[in-house]
Image (cartoon, rainbow, N blue to C red; front, top):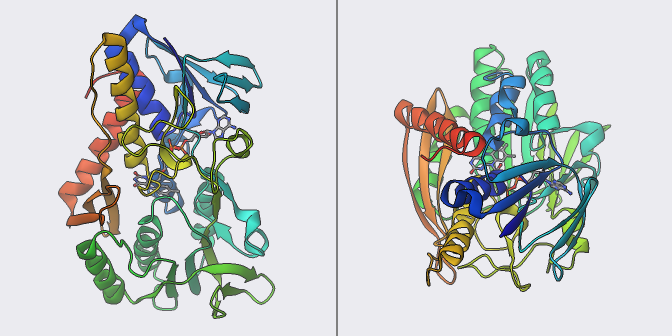
Length: 378
Ligand SMILES: Cc1cc2nc3c(=O)[nH]c(=O)nc-3n(C[C@H](O)[C@H](O)[C@H](O)COP(=O)(O)OP(=O)(O)OC[C@H]3O[C@@H](n4cnc5c(N)ncnc54)[C@H](O)[C@@H]3O)c2cc1C
């Protein structure tokens, strides 16, 4: 069976490693990504706040040594979901099973004034460049804001506000700074009232202004004012934005999307095209766009393909569960365990923040690297 996996992010790497470990020579996995290396989403915050070095946060795909997996660094130009044929800059790949895991593309240019008058911290380039910008920042009005929905890792703007508070405090400029967080959600983490309450208390305790249920639509770069969708205005000296998200153009052109994202069967991750699956941020499966959910979906597709090759009648269905780590600053990390099931209200609870959970998060990252790059179970 030849499985062609498009995108070597959280979803594509997890799927490839699971197939390789379970099936060895019985499967031929072609894993395609335009980038040379993988960067965890949370490493963007680590680099921008000076907690990690850029080079140490890049994990080169040339180190992928899983026996069944061939990594191809190339840009996907066209996807034919009927023929299961993929066109890349380095040739065509025909698949028995095709898995689209191309994530969400980010568009800072889609928010008027953002490129000219602000910064974004969601792309690798944007977050890594902020490291130098922050190192030079001498205090003032800081606005952290979301510019559209959906956006990935809904807790990330809250984490950024808490880490920014620490950063400004350590540099001795917190007292002459104001910190505002603009989020489209009414509370920071809607499926988890307990996590939202802990976050709102942390914002209040640190003097972070919370603007829930609001969005920034544009920046007036000359006047240095953020223009809110409800007509409000927020002046800033430093603007850190979450840019507009869209499915990659090649996915939209393939006919796989409806209303911008790929609809899938929420239990199996199948698209409407036979033997074409989609996982992670590129889908509208109903979970938040986050690595832990992409990983959980990859496991379900892997189990289905393993069951098929072994002749097993059944494989598990997706349960919409994910455990997210949440940076609180001051060395503490919390854990939020959330479940999104079709037709039911999502629920979740928070543990921490604590130094022990911070250690668990480090273990989470290192276990993924061992699995994805060396095919080690764990
Ligand atoms: C600041 C920040 C913090 C975050 N923190 C967390 C966290 O703590 N926990 C968590 O679970 N999630 C976190 N996330 C979210 C997480 O990074 C994403 O949700 C996750 O990576 C999605 O996985 P994916 O496999 O769907 O897509 P991705 O990991 O985005 O992978 C998609 C891949 O497709 C490739 N690609 C796209 N188009 C093409 C093309 N045309 N040709 C070839 N390759 C292409 C891309 O290069 C990319 O490698 C964070 C995100 C950000 C921005």
